[in-house]
View 1 (cartoon, rainbow, N blue to C red):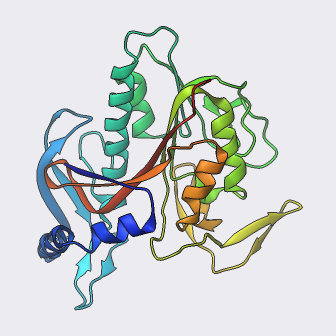
View 2: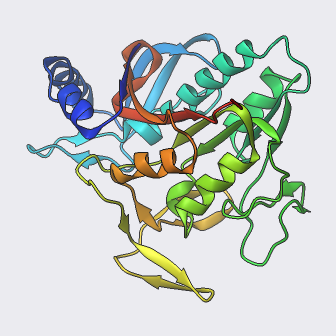
Amino acid sequence: MELNRCNTSEDYLALVNGPAFTLRWLLEYHLSRSRGRAVTIAGFCSPCARTVDFVAPFDGAWHAPDGTLVPNWRDFLRCPACTMNGRQRRVAQLITEWAMDLACRDHVRGYVMEQVSPLYRWSTTTFPWVEWTGSEYLGAGKIGGREEKGIRHEDAEALSFADATFDLVVSCDVLEHVNDPSAAMAEIMRVLRPGGRAILTFPMDPALERNQRRAARVDGTVRHLLPEIYHGNPLSRRGSLVFTDFGWEVLAQLRAAGLSDAALYVYWGYELGYLGIQFYFLGHKAPPT
């Protein structure tokens, strides 16, 4: 697997405009010309620790300039065993690295901003010595920390946890769905212990310098500023409304919130089923001086 850290948009552009990314695109384009209903790739699933045939259907595919359908590698190239997509499988690798770093410590706590997901189930079964907490957003007006049918409710903008509760916070494609991402980032920092780690994924448009608001909640009413976009949500047929299209401004937001070393990490690995331009954000809460 190839991994590159980008601190600025200039770092990113220098990377993706290089010859290596051109060759990757040609490979992915060739794979996309499959005559079947899906692209199948033999590889190794890190969470399952075994070889599998990753499968990417053409749901959510986009069109290349010549009309060829290219799968949404990020969200739909899944392992048939654990059902995790590439984004989730990479986060699972990062959780593994974190857990191994803290394996000799007592009372290690991790919070995943999801509960009805293969990633959360995998985390709790793979590292049972970690005190895990998972949650979902169950709707406005719910009380944080309360459970409904075994599912804990939390509002990312107003978490119910005490300060400095967790050694790790994982947020996978959550921040684009909250009304005030800066408030959610501040909450992540608040509940992290000093030295704690944040692993974050969310869609970002590398062509945008500034974030773009798609919707805003004012006095309890959602006002749409751009055409509505919804992402999949296991608890809602309609999905979750996208409030923000993130641009490079988000790095400054994360650093201002307290993740002073926050950076974007671009990764690619054919054998691990990481295709397309994939990235995540990672940072730490500074330890006391």
